[in-house]
Length: 335
Image (cartoon, rainbow, N blue to C red; front, side, top):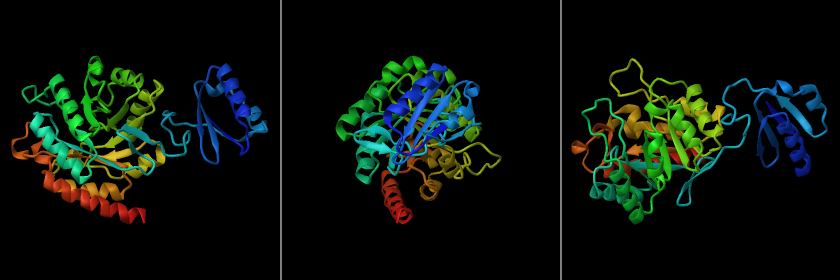
């Protein structure tokens, strides 16, 4: 349920109303916009007498929300959320950033080269997997703790906030210096992990699962937000369909649809979404045109010898070209 307050309602009146809601055992979420204040109520709202509430002089309107995701719902929070991702960078609410780097952290030399080249082109955040969930148990599984150490060392040189994936809540102490913790597609519904991330103060990037609906993605965000962490970024990274020419089917319609449903930032990952380096540029541009708040692009200095996902990785010079074109598309849509 949401209660929309009338313009001119004082802070004292608002706080008194919130205290009344809390006395009924409800969780209260206040969204104070420039012209309007919305109070979101989570819990057993059957206790609230809507007729009584609507009769109050400070209430403009009351609405029940039927969707199961409450904190993530745009009705609760009409203005776009902006997530501080470190280094003075933000995503959402008009702030656009590109996360770039290889699928897997392989060495200091590899990560430093990618970090310096991508930052020079405008990729202000550095990605790299230290823990790698792989379909085959015989594939490269990542460098784990040493991979995180490499990311830290490169960050000291380039100044880029780092983004890397977590697979197990027990590893959280290792992620103290990570700026954005990524929840991969395979862990999107690892609810115990999501609960633990809800207790942190880190920015959390949640990737859509391979066969999950937008509602299920938003419910995963809700798990984190219910724990008190509202620094969530959603990522459309393609879903599994009957098509075999691409690794996944990048669902571009998810970007504007999610913007209708939620206030959370939405980025796109055309690398995983297509699985082919030749398709990354056109799909990245299409995602930007569809309203994405950012991109995640896989970049490797030597894709042919990458330990994972070389086929979808751009070379640094290809990333340079992509960034130039992205800027041109943004100039058009913002004009």
